Amino acid sequence: MKTGFFFRIQIFNQEMKKSLDFGTESIWFGFYNATIIIEILKYFNSHFFLMLLTKTKIGSSKINGIGLFANQFIPKGTIIWKFHSGFDIKIDKNELAKLPETTKECFLKYAYLNPDTNKYILCLDDARFFNHSDDPNCIDETPEEENEGITFAARDIQQGEELTSDYRKYDADYDYKMSIP
Image 1 (spheres, rainbow, N blue to C red):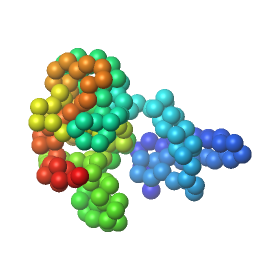
Image 2: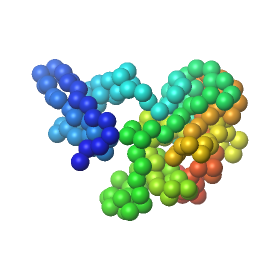
Image 3: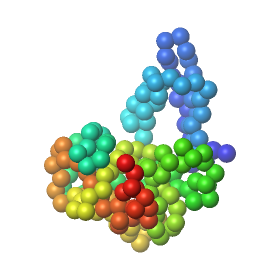
């Protein structure tokens, strides 16, 4: 059953015309084609409010593999990311246990375990590429009126600077994350 937002887009790829339906819990299409997936991402980025609230880009990180970088100057106190139900995914540990092992490993690499709700959160935007730092330039807080956290700039962040957070503040799976090569 599809919940949350729902939309349909038309993709034209040379001789192929496909209609794609998107729901918050499932994205289905009976074919895999990189060109079409890229077009879907372009459509998403230009038509929908993404939960990263500042301009960012992903790139090679000196900290760990891929990182998230500021693509603009971000003043101290600016909200950088906010959980958005219906776009970001929240699941119980029981649901995670139902996944095949390789899928579960990939999910756990990018999701965090909220210690307050004991639910996993997977960001569907590039926020999943925040890397850990003991001295982060971003802080994560959960205001009383929010279910999930909000990420703020802890200080002024320069364009091109990697965005970092302290996983220990919001991820009950911190030790697991730090053990991933």
